[in-house]
Image 1 (cartoon, rainbow, N blue to C red):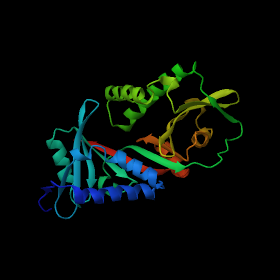
Image 2 (spheres, rainbow, N blue to C red):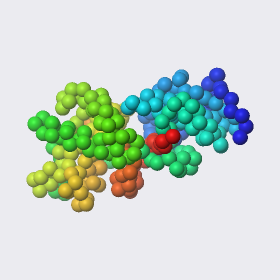
Image 3 (cartoon, rainbow, N blue to C red):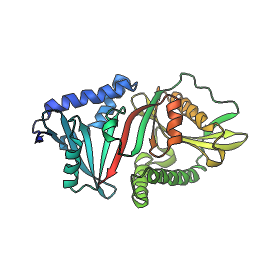
Image 4 (cartoon, one colour):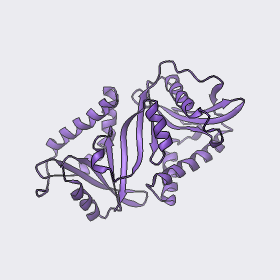
Length: 285
């Protein structure tokens, strides 16, 4: 590998990087406004990234504090043999682990040994989603909200730990921060909808969505089937509920996150046509 040199003027690299990110989002089916909104999120803090090249490609890296740990991030990697340099750079900054975001799944072949920690997925919702026979949806009541909140937070912490990204203590801290950020007014937070799915007079699952999350997008924070009702086809039905909520909220695209280690859910999303927007992988150093 040729000697790696730091880049002081990032203009040439940044133009190519942004086009590659946009191409990945377009390939996943994003509209142009949505692709550019996602790009804006992807380049947040880009001025602080370190960019290097060996003449064959680019490497962009950075470090950040996250849940009490210093985390290294490989933001871009096109230099054929640049991964080792990127990992050494992150370790030299004191990072405890290294993360990478793969837009549209591109570049996964360079990180096959990095476990998948999470994915963002999306699909254009059916124009007139039809709920399965015998399944009804209603708003969650304010009286039901505290119990739902406690169960949802516990499930979120368990998902993070199962993905292997954080310790239980770090996962709990992240959960507290995330719920406070997304639901500052709790049940009355504008733009958020909470739903109960019922069959045979019993609540079999719940849903939590955020309308207008991005241009034309409803984000499904949770579409949960209660454990005792799983294996009965309600998982696929819950996706239809998400599409129904998306259209009900005036959006066209449904988007959500799935944690790594949940192969059953990933298989369901593959079979129902939800494209991978971003995939997050990491290893401990």
